[in-house]
Length: 404
Image 1 (cartoon, rainbow, N blue to C red):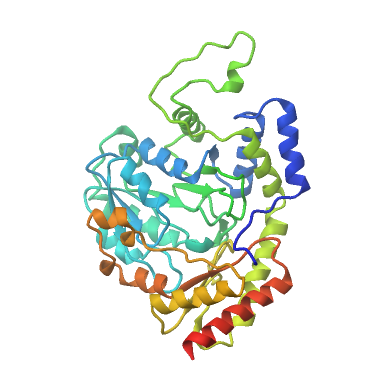
Image 2 (image 1 turned 90 degrees about the vertical axis):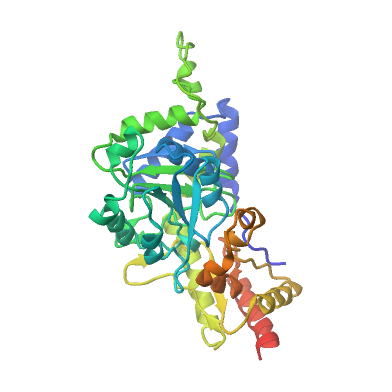
């Protein structure tokens, strides 16, 4: 079977991990700090903190901002559970909004309509790697109309003076918006380095800071380091210095740190990301579009326009004129022919936990329409040209069987 998204693992990766293992330093240490610096250089962020997952990064930033019970956080209905679960963990209310019909991303007008005096954070999600319209979102939260609704409840919120924009860029490292890379498009950006992502550290994530000038990046980075390590004011590497064993716990923090084993993989991945990984993924996207474009039943994904370029993470194919049942039959047919495909995503109001909280998918018609017609095709570095052609022909045959 042609798999859906296996990670890229080769001798360079194996040697990098072996080097760390031989060094005797495998938890957070020099490799993690080097990876943070390289990510800062790559994205242009003011400061980067590596963490154990993107979920950890999102939750850490919500807690840094003081999100709590009684607060509201706006999240797209069309996303993975992590984007909303972190809000629930903080005791706040998830306010789902609908999607765009073209690029799957969060609707700006729906954001505007959902903002109340309780709104503290907006979490836009770059679905499939295509950046959201960050200028529009940033302008919205900075407008006098929206700022007048904002009611800060702690010093950090007072300092920002408006709704925080926390980008869930789990899919979009390397994506471009108006000439700038994801990582600096809004206040805070969180990347995922999970095994299926373009750039992987097996698990892991990173927080990129691009806050207004009132915030000192180094000071905020140090605060976040403490929060990410149980509120401990020294990390393990610092404590290893002679006579420097004593430390303090200054708050009840979390266990969100990245290890040097993970960072070693990330350093290999990042070094070859722009000129190797992204180029291959771009080729795969373009080849799929070339092969599938003659089919009248298909709506090809938007992954480039005049202001944006995707990171080519997920090829989000939609089939015109079908429903969820027929989409599932098409997927079955594709699997019978030994090609693995997927669906990104089942909207969260359809999930049991969120349904039980009272959310209804009928309130998000665009998200449901996108989901009910969507099939994600395999995209990964080692997918051969021959396999690309096999995937496309298998998809076309399945559609012909069930749609004509």
